[in-house]
Image (cartoon, rainbow over all chains, first blue to last red; front, side, top):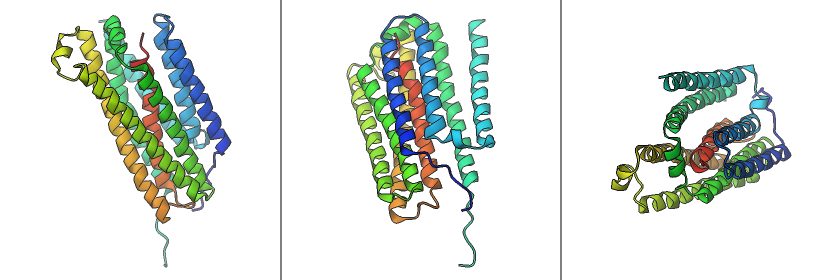
Length: 93
Length: 200
């Protein structure tokens, strides 16, 4: 194989894992406080941070080329359109 | 041998990512259903959510995140030619998957013991919002559990490929793609956990 592969170091991966553990503890702690509608947004915000870390480092997206990054972007935009249009219908019915 | 077998590393990985996007849309649909019913029945969802065991949910989150780390470490290990470490990490990941499924078994058994299972008489007597919550809970965690089972099976297959040397430092796309699948399972759980278990 002629392609060059980026090798993510053990210490980077373990650092990401520690961050994920801390974010999990935060999400559980925050969920035990009554904040009304802010609870769900905090949960989704932290979950998005965690998935960002998993995709960037564990799934190597940070080291991928433009093609995969754009495809991921389009997939997420598609999902956002689905969610957005559904709520446009449900909330204003 | 006069010719080398055709290898398309970028193509194989691109194909895997395209498949993962379809999985994202599949689970996305279930999350949309959840969001719509949450906005319609916020109080019933909150009450039903309290029935779920936060400890089981949290332990399973930690198990899955750790297994995601170990599969990522396995890929770094194979790239560096550390085959024994790679095998150990894949084995650890499969052990985490089994632990997750065992936890899920106890969790579901407790729920079913309390009469909460699809189409149960107890569930039919509950307010509409609560029975919808448990219906979505069973289908989403069930589909996710099936993905855990498939991911673990794939990793066992990759384990034997690495052991026999067919997957090695120069050709590890199978491990990388199985790893990507495993991370997707983790990603879905990252959203599933706070939405179902931590609802107030």
